[in-house]
Amino acid sequence: IPVENFDLIIFGGTGDLARRKILPGLYRRFCAGQMPEKARIIGAARSEMDNDAYRDFVRVAVTEFGGKTASEANVLEEFLQRLHYVPIDARGDGGWADLAKLVRKDVVRAYYFSVGPGLFGDLAARLTKHGLADDTVRIVVEKPFGRDLASAKALNQALAEHFDESQVYRIDHYLGKETVQNLMAVRFGNMLFEPLWNSQYVDHIQITVAETVGVAGRGGYYDKSGAMRDMVQNHLMQLLCLIAMEPPSKFEPDAVRDEKLKVIRALDPVDHHHIVRGQYADGPDGHSYRDDAENLRSFTESFIAMRLNISNWRWAGTPFYLRTGKRLKARSSEITVVFKDAPHSIFGAEEGRHRNMLSIRLQPNEGMTLDVTIKEPGPGGMRLLDVPLDMSFADALGPDAEDVPDAYERLIMDVIRGNQTLFMRGDEVEAAWAWTDPVIAEWEARNDVPKPYEPGSAGPEDAMMLMHRDDRRWREIK
Ligand code: BG6
Image (cartoon, rainbow, N blue to C red; front, side, top):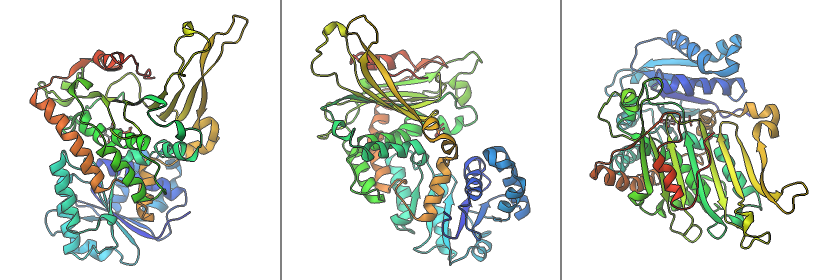
């Protein structure tokens, strides 16, 4: 279904995110027939170039990152005709009058700030000054949304001087992932799980976001952030919220975001004994984190594991274990809900522990597994065995599973539709930083040195111990 007619202006239109994600994503939506005939995309950046040069740039980007649709050359040429380019000076007045001439007032106008947060305030002010903004325009901003509570507040204020909260779309691309939204469908579309979704029945919950890539090429940014700021404060926090929140009354922006906010506010401060920070050491290719980050004395973590408690009626007593890291043994993101043991085993203690586990695989091989206990087939008496009820999206949905839009595609279309449900509200981001700040301050004060781990492993040994101490174990990363 096509969305309303729009002008989407991408500040940072020649940047890496535009090239890899935004423009190829828009192209795929174009191929899917979702872009109305008169919709336009306007790239704006510092480089001097004309429309044709920008179209050449986008042609290369789409061919490289557009996936299989990119091969249809005539469709691509048609798409490129929707593109325009305006050289702009974000900190001065150059180019703004040209942009003002181009942008239409009678269509949805969305300004995508695909630039560093240092420019958010400048762009907001210039949009207003040059008559490009009113209370109907939409502003899209990217992470990192600040690096602590104070800077996030300053960014929120800078935007609030010019725009209402209902106009601001803060992207966390994890919320655009199909399987992440599926978390809500699983929880609130089924009768089966919700009655058991609390500390009475759930022993613990694990969230793992493991990556195989290192930080080479983006060490300058990463070394000042680390896994806590880069992944936990935003992506893992969002996953935690969706898993732990109360059922919202409706699938609507504020209903969902109110519930997420309550989870973040109910998080206990984390004790430093419940955190393991790691940094990848030399691998077979001879590249350590410190080499990749080009900082041989770096104490920044490329891995973090932690145990969290949510102090509310639903979750008191059920720990949440989170871990994420670079250069681990596999790219695998998974959430596992481990249920408690049955209260009494009629089969005798020697049958050991059999636990139901619901595992939701976010990427890759998206799907769900529910481990159930059955009798081991055969004449050997009543032996118990855990087997998975397995559902993969690819099997269940067939070829449709391949047409699932990428996170950015979905989120950009949601901006045009004016639906903020999958975007973070300002108070949510601030609450996440308010929880993150003291944790980081504490390890900084102690000069905490991250534990080295081997690339291709599951992280430092201490992360295993974090679980073993509690008589629990991580799911294998595979
Ligand atoms: C980004 C982080 O937000 O998310 C990166 O800055 C990380 O460090 C990436 O690699 C992971 O995203 P995805 O979609 O590949 O899981």
